[in-house]
Image (tube, rainbow, N blue to C red; front, side, top):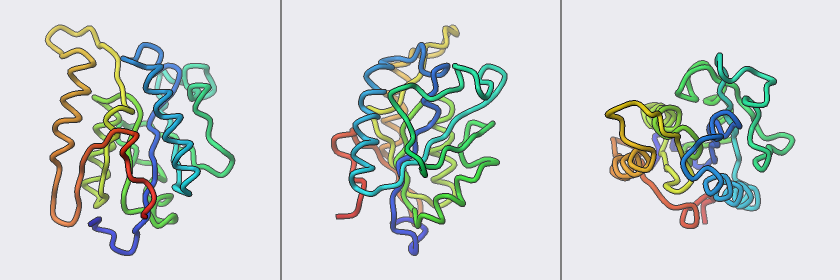
Length: 185
């Protein structure tokens, strides 16, 4: 149903699964393991995997915190895009990479749920992509800010509201990693 009728493909987006982002993440090891399985499945099914890596004053390129977690390693030829804004589409080559691959549907995973994952979901959806959030393959940390829900509540809320996203010419939705449809059957 994507707004890109001429782009029937799907891509798996792995957002900011970096050492400094995941170090204190809720269920971090579990999410990394789930993502590793999903990445392997996407590769086996011929679905493009696109890696996104944030940089700022805490995530300085080349530092250990900026590196992707060791169990999630891009293969040669898989795009690894740097970004400076929460939305992975802002001021990056993500749109060009997806267009070149014929992608009109994105499957979004990664960290942090309440910042970069949400922003990328909305960014893709607003740009015309069908967007699927993998409900058990995104995470965030406890901000410790009074009045802000804990990470489990943030994840649950994001899963709930994204499961109901629809707009003219495109749909959102959620699925667990085991149930995500990647390649067209």
